[in-house]
Length: 453
View 1 (cartoon, rainbow, N blue to C red):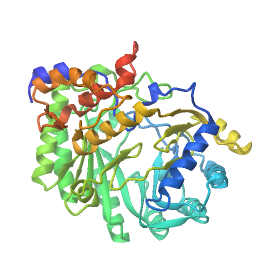
View 2: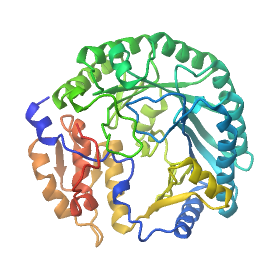
View 3: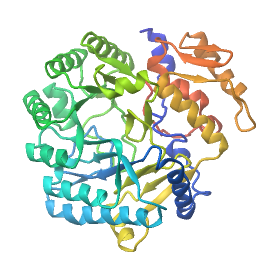
View 4: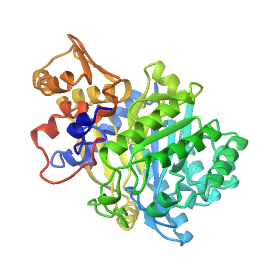
């Protein structure tokens, strides 16, 4: 890859799991009452035809992984499990109380933290409690994030029994020096055992998360990790760049500094090598940072142009409404976003008071909705239509910002369309930034985002 391009485009930028991005949410026009209205509107438009998605955040971990930027609570006290699950189920009941009819659930994803911190019995109790007053969509998909070191056969069997067929294991890197730096000692044999167990139990899709750009990580370490992965051939692989954001409050990224991170040029070499090895193994690149075998439904959804992206990452199917349950979870009604309290104590207190635990959000205006479609198209399909214009979106100013990107052959612009070239794939975030009018109108004075490359 051309080094000047890396240097030119390696700037802080959003990952675009939403638009507008969280730092640009307008809290002044948001209220919980308006959020409820947007949920009802979205539910009425999509529940029968699509169903809804649920993201459930399970924040507890027994030890701190220092590469992690997620909301978590470190503890070995497992008596926290039952009160937390009780709070999540009460939150779900608060939503059920104002939804106009019984929801049809298409997706459930358990994220964390470490979902397998919770006992198999408690996880099963949680899911049964969620499903008690809901129907299932015909093609529903349930998935969870598993830690290879503590995901047991009992966990897999308990979740399989309540409908789970997808598991994602966090691998990161197999190099011991890297694992020590990120405080995640995880031998290949543990990942191999966890992957085999999932398949034996009947899980039809196993995913591995691999990160490049980690502290002390060499090009050889990435190569070794990919070659070891070849022995297991997971159905999907998330191969993404480490996001170094130590300035975010509560972040555990410590024990190393930026001086210990690979340079931008090394990171892109790591990515390019990893991509080539994965493609040799039969994986197809999906969107920005995912790979899948042709037998996996993520690839099939790409081919059918049904690929979707939300706060959970890439999804094989779209739901207009995603309700986030649990501390810090973000919900998406398409017309608005709402985030729950980030403190477990505050979250549980609001639930106890019978209130939705939302502490901030954003209601999308007409311009937001247009830009959101463009960014979603670019992130999922690497192209977007330019055939419409209206009063809410100033396309000429976007095209003006794209001129240099086009001159660098990262995109091709036709009269009615824009397509990302193969050369431009590593710079999709930069391309999306040209459409991001909120970012362009109010560029941050302090560091908000990780680097794009």
